[in-house]
Image (cartoon, rainbow, N blue to C red; front, side, top):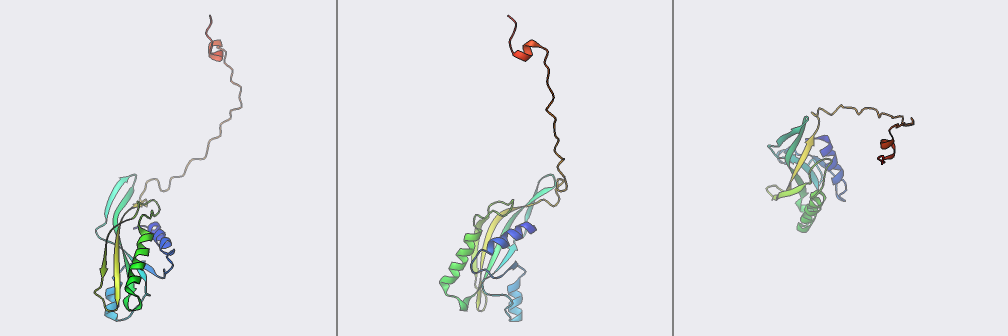
Length: 171
């Protein structure tokens, strides 16, 4: 979507005390099962944009993505107690719910589900709705403001009309 959105999410997730790993989702879990090798640490977070992502134009070349963003929380189940899994999932939600990435709408959770079809690990999926601006095509992107104009207001204004100058009408 946009680099600013990704950067904002990364910065936000780094405030989690247990944060270790964050990447875009690229079906890592399927490839991990095929290789039978764990390639990322416990409590990894992956971000996925669910398709299709609707795009609307608002004028001047600016567009908005109306996106559903899914966060996959990877948990090695044999290393954690059941309550720990809920705790990590709730802490992740607390960081994302209501968060306003730069120029975006407020992030709002719309769904979540555990994915337990794996051997030795669990993936908790949290879906958030958010509107993300894209100004890369903006016609105002390279516009430079004009230099300020300085006015010389030191001249003496002479009003030779008595009524205008005093505000009094002749009697």
